[in-house]
Image (cartoon, rainbow, N blue to C red; front, side, top):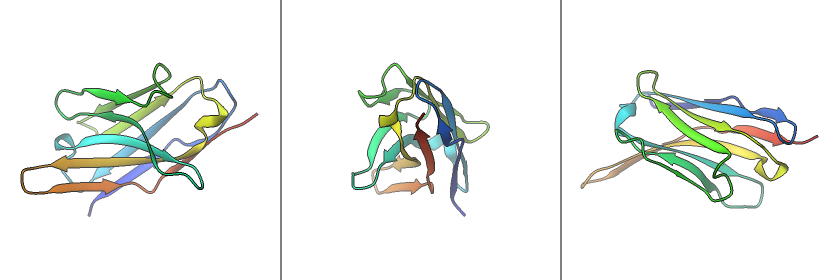
Length: 120
């Protein structure tokens, strides 16, 4: 059974930090690229950050560059999102996403999301 379980969300003041975790199970984690998305009511889900498999190449949305860092631990089957200098515009539900592509198909999975609220 495939599972992506996010944790680490919560309420934080502007300028503060949070670290999100996404624990994966039920698939070969190291073979999947991992991403964090976020979504606010009435808006489309937005890609925040992504990280490759072996190479660990990373990509970030312009709005979070220099503030957020994505990383992964293939021994713990976990991907992280370190979020610093948070501002109210970062308030959203954050989702973990796993993706593997092959010549034949695409396999992808979503987590259930974790709420991040930035407010004073």
